[in-house]
Amino acid sequence: MTVIVPAHDEEPIIGGFLERLIGDAADGELDVIVVCNGCTDDTASVAKAVGPPVRVIETPIGHKPTALNLGDEAAGDGFPRLYVDADVDVDLDALRACARALDAGALAAAPALRVDTSRSSWPVRSYYRIWTELPWAQEGMVGSGIYAVSEAGRARFDRFPDDGADDLFFSAHYAPGERVSVRDVSFGIVASPTGRQLVKRRSRIIAANELLADAVASLPGAPQSGGLRSIVDLIRRRPALTPHAPAFVAISLAAKLRARRMLAQGEVTWEGDDRSAPTPT
Image (cartoon, rainbow, N blue to C red):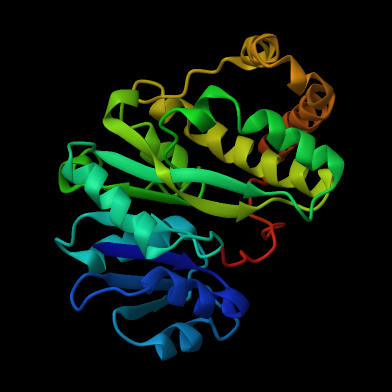
């Protein structure tokens, strides 16, 4: 398995992340390529200190798509291939499970998503109570920090685009029946601590997705927006979630409005992550 890790100023967490990722890997089982992009800290030094199977590439360009493309170039013919953000909590067993799903015929795969809201305010917890139950999060979600691809799946596209969200671009190339959410393993993210920070994060994601909307519209896995209907249908099926709907709607609307302003002003930038470092599980 080849694992590409784009890393920008991840010094506090990169060492622990790599140790968990490598786990008890057998000799030759993993090739982990950490692409340090635009780092102003010691991310590269910490990653290099981990040693094999980790190798480090450095570029002065702080740009995730550039890092992904450099990782692909360094990976050569290494498959299955996984792209993993350094701020997710994932272990070797999850990577192996994704590889098995690809061997079984899936073109793309990812572990199930686990969101840690233990350090978040109640609006953030309510938001994720709804979000994690929506169809996209439950059925074949591939993205949000980790995704795996077979050689045949990777042949669907050439390079990651310079603008827009890489996970949307990736997942849109695979129809729902071609991508798999591996439900018996998971990866974790730590939610934003406050509603204001979550709005900032969600607005960046919405704006980045909008930059790619036209480019992915005709692809087999282009997202189908359920909008308000999806939420209404969910509440009808799960009435116990009703108290969480107001916070979800408020955060979603605020994020959409902020995303529109960002796009209008040409300021779709990744302003730094509001999430905390992942914690081992």
